[in-house]
Length: 289
Image 1 (cartoon, one colour):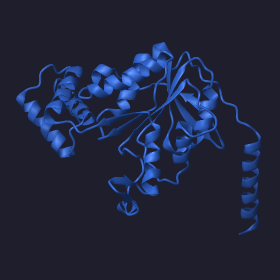
Image 2 (cartoon, rainbow, N blue to C red):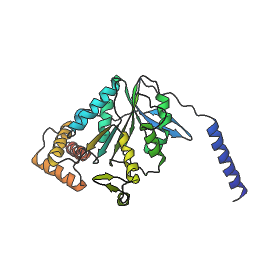
Image 3 (spheres, one colour):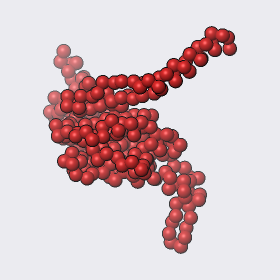
Image 4 (cartoon, rainbow, N blue to C red):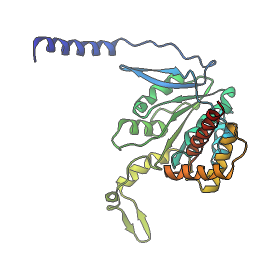
């Protein structure tokens, strides 16, 4: 290593130390003007940033998940009204409306003081800092983290467990965590984990590895499961989105194309139905111009 490289390395270390000593200042979010936010990190500090153009969707636009809608809507209504409510884990098939459902709840309850802060998985280690920033505010906050999956030794996994239940400091009652995952337990499960399972009489005692892997999901008070749609539900969603894009009738030809579209993607989901309807609307409009 030459002298210049040594000087650069020492300067970089010095700047990192100074950054830790000098706290960064970020503008305070406008909680009245905005209702959707993200947690951002820069250097060794983080801040809450407003989402300029949030994705707005209504509950009516989500078809085929009526039971899940009713249960999470009731939970959110209790929370917004200041009553007790549960953290929510939404798990299951991709494209079935898990994250869209949370966004739709924000659209419904934003006027009543609900605010949403999206936190990416690698920033979950900052959960305590985020909660501290919104502690005692009059608004009601959902901390939203999407598409979670962990290795058990990831720091975000441990941070989420502590905030959900297990810290000596209680989480503010104006905060709930809503998370989505394709896995119920959010961590990989292996056959070897079952080898230490013990049977005492008619009772089954799972191994410590399995107990650790289910301990995170058990900290969510409300579990909502989402399943792949059957053909009728899928076509019902296609009809809704076709109408939304200005195509009032689904002909036999369009029906066949919708089924072929789903077959090519290996999935009958709300996302696939929405993508098909967009394609149909785009092709129809392009032929009229």
